[in-house]
Length: 140
Image (tube, rainbow, N blue to C red; front, top):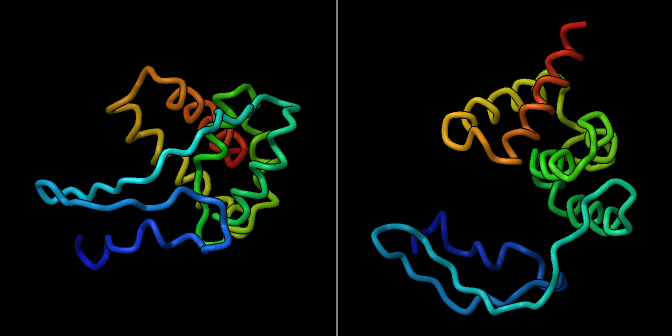
């Protein structure tokens, strides 16, 4: 595995609960990591879910490195309106530090890319709602 790819499985602090990296290969130049199986279930992202505080803790730990639109998109796809999803994400370091204009530009960019390849997916529909909300808010 090339130097920029190496260590993906070890980038999470050792004290964090995570599956153990079992190995890696690079068939045709594509990095492929193999992790041990961990039993679990999908988090409930619906409004009012008791999973949301746990998810916030996990995303907060991840977001210290950089902002990511995924929590917003997943929350919107799970029934939150975009404003509620942003309010939830505002306490996350990476999101809270991002300038509002950059969040709007990022939402529009993600939407443009996803509409080309995944136009009819729930995630793209959620991104569309989020981007429209962002553009409407900045147009006022």
